Image (tube, rainbow, N blue to C red; front, side, top):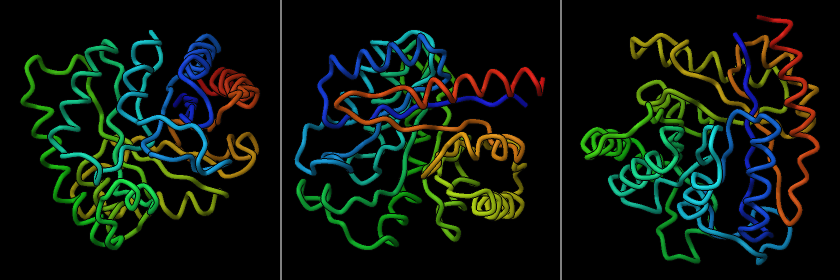
Amino acid sequence: MSVRIGVQVQPQHADFATMRRAWREAEELGVDTIYTWDHFYPLSGDPDGKHFEGVVSLTALAASTERARIGALVFCNSYRNPQLLADVHRSIDHLSNGRLIVGVGAGWFERDYEEFGYEFGTAGDRLRALARDLPLLKERLAKGNPAPVGPVPILIGGAGEKVTLKLVAQHAQMWHTFADNLDAYRHKAEVLAEHCRREGRDPSTIEHVIGTFGDTLALADGLAEAGVAEITVGVSGPDYDLGTLREAIQWRDRYNEQHP
């Protein structure tokens, strides 16, 4: 199985002109997927630095690219009515000509909640809300007119073994998490596979999209050999250095040529 490379161009510490250049350069390099995220404040660097909202960022990403798949890692379920979130994605899917991935998760960044007046609650509260809202999101995606152009796969982000991975098994076509070593990834993958078995689902029908906390290329061969479909790297403003992405794409091409 060939492996893909994705990049998350984080909408922090930069303006849209700079992000647009990064998106287009990543596409010219041959990246498979370009992601944004869904926060209201930076997650690194100056906590009060420049930052842009997720739906607007994804819309601009759709309009600025032509080939790469696009999505967010991930939209926070707490911030929008799930049916609105579905229709936002359906509309952006048309703008992208069918390249959209619907990324969603339970939410975790407490400052976003507090500053914008959302109830943070507990992790259990947020996961129960996600479990409640995922069927509504899926139903609304199926009702829109015109229907989505592309398959609009649902990607769920997170690694909680009891609830999040169960929701992945129930609802998602893609799963994203981070791993700092192969054993950690393999353990989570087996937990997900067990949830799939309990749900009567073939685990191979869920693509694993994995980011790393350190040297991406040091884990790349092992992740690919373990069946990971896509490896992601993250880049932040203000400059969006794509050097690591360039190396990852070169690795991908060598690996896929050697493993046809």
